[in-house]
Amino acid sequence: MIQSMTGFGKASTELDKRKVTVEIKSLNSKQLDLSVRMPNLYKENEMWVRNLLSRKLERGKVDFLIYVENIGNETPNQINQNLLEGYYKQIKESAERLGIETPTDWFQTLLRLPDVLKYESQEVDAEEWNAVSRVIDDAVKQLLDFRKQEGAMLQKLFEEKISNIASLLNEIEPYEAERVDKIKVRITEALQKIEDFDYDKNRFEQEMIYYIEKLDINEEKSRLTNHLNYFLETMKSGSGQGKKLGFISQEMGREINTMGSKSNHAEMQQIVVRMKDELEQIKEQVLNVL
Image 1 (cartoon, helix red, strand yellow):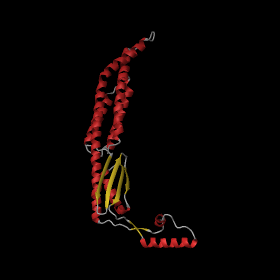
Image 2: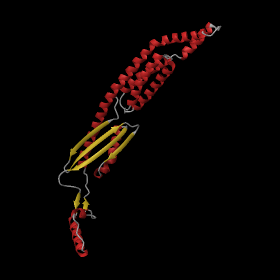
Image 3: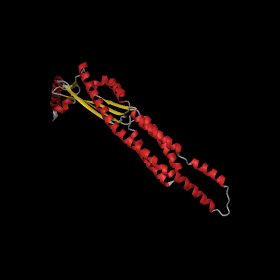
Image 4: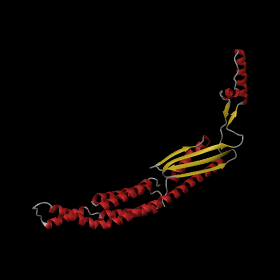
């Protein structure tokens, strides 16, 4: 079963002092393109997070985010009360001595002064990080489940398109014998229009055989059928097959293009165009396969 590179996962938990939420988004990319954003509180564990995501997600443009909401009255920023009062007295005394007005908004003025707000560093114990890591695992699991669901939809689409190409390939067959007769008649009529022109019929037959062999598409049909079957087998072989499916679809395109250049028949060329359309839809979506 193939997997898509597109996915989304979100999980959260409430700890004693804060609520922690983890979000992960994934889009298609040739390699793993990983962006990790997390608060300073958990920065020391960033490498652990990156290793986990690299191992679990393999490929894709991945955006990982942890955000924290404080619960209750506690905040990491505390007002330095003594320093604030000291600033207040000094500003008031200076204003009286200089004969100028005091600030109209005392708090806005005082809170901007150096060290009035002090940051109390927070430490994360093993128990808290274990809880956060479980939330990360839950979000990753959601994203992987999302990828599997998207992969199932893509697989159904690919099976439909492969079946359509195989059906179109069968539609070509009746026109092949008809095409040979038409080519022979057209060349014969052209020769007959040349006045007093005589030709060796045996040599003509030999040249016709050579010409028709150059237009023969049996090899292309056989190779295309093999590619179609190989594409289906590769899809069933498991995840991580996106690049391989891309290569197979390129080979399918080569055979279809060669058939188009050899067809020399209006109805056959129309069928080839329809095959190309089906294949283009495969190529567009195969870029999103893990």
